[in-house]
Length: 380
Ligand code: PLP
Image (cartoon, rainbow, N blue to C red; front, side):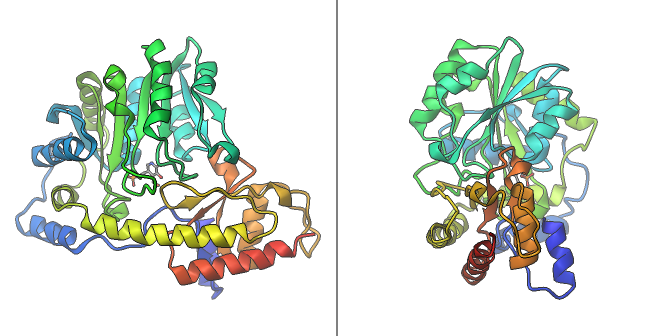
């Protein structure tokens, strides 16, 4: 949809993009400055495969200070982004036929990574009524003798859902009964959480050794293009990731790593500012979405997405007589009729929804929602 939106825009159409998954902020100045200094200081050669020790130390300190988690630097592997760390973790853990349990909706790449590793994705479907969160009973029911990994994000892309400590604890009780299952915990949106402090599933000592914690710099520090992320895991998994990465990408960009140290050590002031802007926009979009007949929304607790139920439009026709059959049709209709780019929920494993990113200006959000309301009102 982003690509189609850009094509339309290149023809002079005023397209508002609510389809992208990146903050609409610039990387903080002090981080950019650190990159410039890294160049001047000739940090331009291969780095160690798992990352510079100074960066891994800064990550260890961050995990201790912000999350109360104890890791040794040897348990940290820096990569070209949370995406590579997720992929490394799956390739490390999954053998052909192994099952990976994934709550839907999920971030698009999860199931594709499992397929690449010749594993099998087992989905637990959720709906807006439960804020897209699974229960311990649903988790237990999805487990089979072939279950190897449980993989999820909190705060979640695409729903913005955030598991509370008590909800995580419920899932942990299930994992305690199944000691062979690993948990891949994608925490890339940890700082964009509107319900309180971030809770990592790795805080539960009984299962910590089986948690592969994934995080990065893209969302917190508006550094999507720098390609910098990491995982924290037990020694064995971390060293397997190191080995795998040594044969694929090697250590990630030396300049990005030096800047990453400064991003972590400088504190969270810019993150707080960004979160405030997202909180304001969340309120704005929530009120405007609630005002569109036929759209059902919840109030997401984190990240910068809404995932409203648009299934009431299925079966309706546009002015040319085309029937809206699924979420992809609706997203295309919104692009062509309202010039607003969104993403159909089918891409995330739940067809009854569309994803809207509110990483856009207040003005564009207001105008996009106005256009959407008008276009949806024309469906008969
Ligand atoms: N995990 C989730 C849930 C995401 O939404 C994204 C990016 O959109 C990533 C991981 C990838 O992050 P990175 O840019 O660090 O590879």
